[in-house]
Length: 207
Length: 254
Image 1 (cartoon, each protein chain N blue to C red):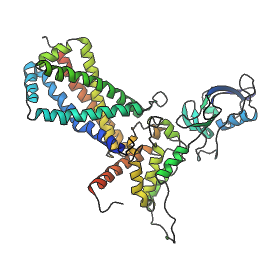
Image 2: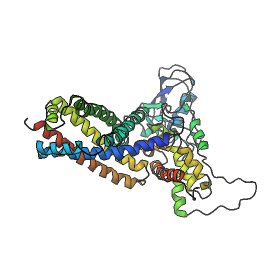
Image 3: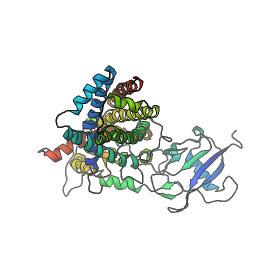
Image 4: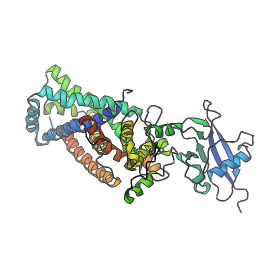
């Protein structure tokens, strides 16, 4: 990074995490929640998303490329830190540490999840529907893996929103930063509820 | 009254910049109102370790002895702070002394803080008042602004914030919180603002502002209570504005 591009890359990393990746994540979790209205409902929603116009363009430019940059640069950022929560056990330092851990967990999860439900299904011509998810989450190990992965992603997004606000100079005063901590905590709880309830619906519906 | 009472210190020592560190234990006679500096002076007066062996006196740096120069910073029981204001009565024993780990060790507890002074030069942490003719009195500064700027001016370049920061380490080129806050201080001054754009461009370069990861250890650890994270967030806002001005252009770009 000797070409003085670090500021640009860091800001791009911060921006892409929220727009479009964070927005996609929120949309994805909410749409999946159709599962709670039954298999029929979920399949209709999945088909709607699958048949969006310009699907491949949207997938590449709204999801894949931004996510790829955010992930690769994020791993670089995570491994340049020398974590010191044992010496400095402050709340924000723990958030800093967890942001890096959840980032790595999310990366592993997303790679697996994309392979399983997007790439492998495309190769084999499997239909992506309620039954597919039911089959995956029937396995307690996979259910645990999905819950850990999704909650990590949600944490990383919510806490990332907090640092986005600081990095772009939106929340400057300590008071605004504290208030924003509560707002992002709410985002974390709300999105966790939305996503975990979806996962449990798949796991508990009798196939 | 305090007859026979001793103070135990475990000190991480290093004979030179490239030597292997080792620890040495000392037991020194207790006196009332001792601080870590007076304990180290006692070792210097009688350099004998806890095993009763003669040893070299422990090397450390000190200056003002009233927490305004920053020279005696070291890790005391794991926390970076000034040895002069670390009172023995308030510390858990054995007292562990170590040099700050983000800086190269010169000898024992003395570290080389040159990187901080280099950073201050890079960000032009001064006010340009020299000229070839008398520039006259500078513009007035609002009292409300002077009050918060004064808080930032308390920085003594001690290095505690760099030691506490997880992003200041050998893998990264981050200049750390202290010089960033100084950019805000000198940009706030009416005459200092002459260099504002140059300062912003420096900290918007590699190893600058964007390398902050918001762990906020700095503001929790600063011995002078400087609002370092407020400075960083304020500079982030300024940098956002500056990058828009740089890219889209501005007639008011100073």
